[in-house]
Image (cartoon, rainbow, N blue to C red; front, side):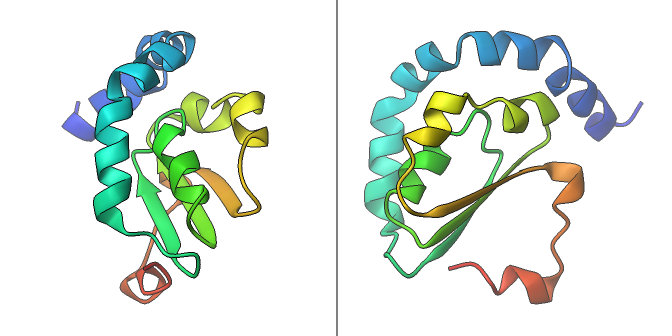
Length: 115
């Protein structure tokens, strides 16, 4: 089994179930780091953001408050499919797209779309 396959199996199974069930608690624990990240990222209203490893979407939604568009991708299909309807609804006018990592393959050309 490759390391990527092991991670994929973990984050599409029990790890995802646990993380989703405890997402609010993890978000609170990481809130200070998210605040610092957003400060230093200097996301402008015209930026397009790629959030790789978005998990349940806490950083995605913070970026969405600042950016024009956000693409959120994670190896965990359940986490990108269920970041919580309430979380998605709290989003700003920014367009947010959620994608399992395997469906989010970027070429060098496509990566230039992001700020």
